[in-house]
Image (tube, rainbow, N blue to C red; front, top):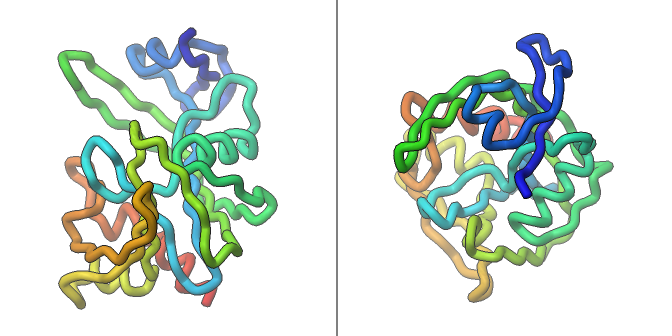
Length: 201
C-alpha cells in the first residue's frame, strides 16, 4: 500500500491527501521532519547513508497523512537508527521551504517541501543504535565545534565515533564525507545545527 501524505498550497494551507508517488510526480507541497540528535558534551549525531556512504541528518522523512510531528519524529528515529527518544527534549530549529527537482532511473521527482528541522538532546552517554542497513549503515558521533572548523578549512579531518552493527569504532572524517546536493555547500547545509549545539555549551 502506498504511503499517503497530506498536501498543501504554498501558504501551507491544507488541501488534501495523495499518495507519496503522486505528491512527487505532481510537485505537491508536503511536510517532512528532520531530527538531529546531540548530547550535552557538544556532540552531534550523523547517520551514514547506505547508498552513498555519506553523512546526513540523524533521521528524516515524510510526515504521513494525519500524523503529528511528534509521532513522525519518533517513528523516523526508530525506523532509521533504531533508538527511542524523549520527544519532550525536542527544539524547533527552523521550518525550511525548498524545492528540488531530480531524476533517477528515468523517473522525475519534484520535491516541494516544508521541512521541519528539530534538535533533540539525548542523555545516554553510550547510546545503542540499531540500523537495518537498507537505508542507514551506522551513526557517527562527532564534536560540533570540530566539525565547524572542518567546514571552515581550519583542519583537514576530525575524529568521530562510529556506531554500527560491528560495534563502536573511531573513524576519520573529511569534508567530502558529508552529503551535499548539487548547488549546496556543507557549512550552509549543516552550519545552523552545529552552531546551535556550540551555543548550548
